[in-house]
Amino acid sequence: MLVARDRIWAITILVILVMVVSGCPQKPQLVPTLLNEPDGFRGIKWGTKIARLPEMELVRSEGAEKYYVRPEDKLKVGKATIERITYGFYRDEFFKVTINVKGLMNYLDLKQTFYSVYGEAEELPGKDIYTWRGKQVFITIEFRGMLNEGEAVYWYKPITEKMSKENGGKSATGAGDL
Image (cartoon, rainbow, N blue to C red):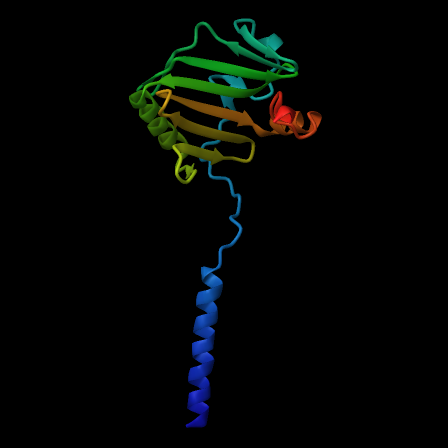
């Protein structure tokens, strides 16, 4: 009888221990979530030099970062009508794309296309921000209700990481002023 009671106590403690350990929050693993990771955007491979793209028009320059548009770009992605597509270059190498849309329906159509192409996204709790992480590319899409606009951004990690190192980890101009 004493052995049976000891076994019951041992099993009870083991069950409680398993429940406590499995219920403890653990650091999330940052594993790639991006299916069909793109090697560029609309025929332009990541890292391409701006000199190879004479059709691009400069719209903004911020030191080593320069942003361009392609006047002949198709302003549709799936069913979504696009306001603007901006191509970012760092030290003349292609590293970023920003897609802007106006209106909730265009945003939802764009988001649906992203889900169809890239798979399930990670959602930022309490926000309308979705992310896909690949080995070389990071993508976000978000909607800003107050402005009634959405934005999708692709970042090519190798150049983004190089930028961060060269800028001493500062991610934005003026960040030190905050």
